[in-house]
Amino acid sequence: MELRTERKLSQKALAEQLQLAGYEFSDLTVLRIEKGTRFVPDYEVVALAEFFHVSCEYLLGVQGKK
Image 1: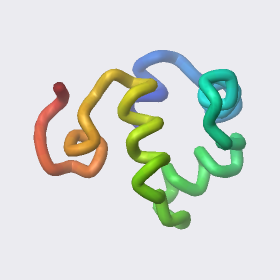
Image 2 (image 1 turned 180 degrees about the horizontal axis):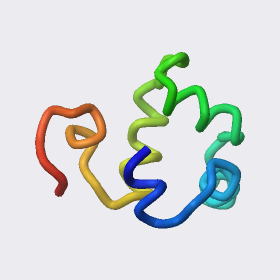
Image 3 (image 1 turned 135 degrees about the vertical axis):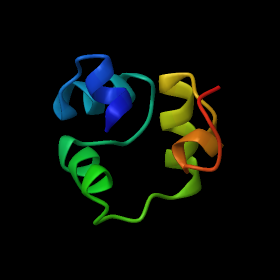
């Protein structure tokens, strides 16, 4: 994930940061999302958008970064 690597976060570090923010993420969850082998429910899209300070539309590839 470009946003994760831009911030120099490992998959594990991202999962830990999301857990601290109250979301249920593991490094395996992050890996599967990045590989496209796991469905991402709307609440996880929102969690990732909030964490990275981007829009949900950006994460879904609908529009540019906001």
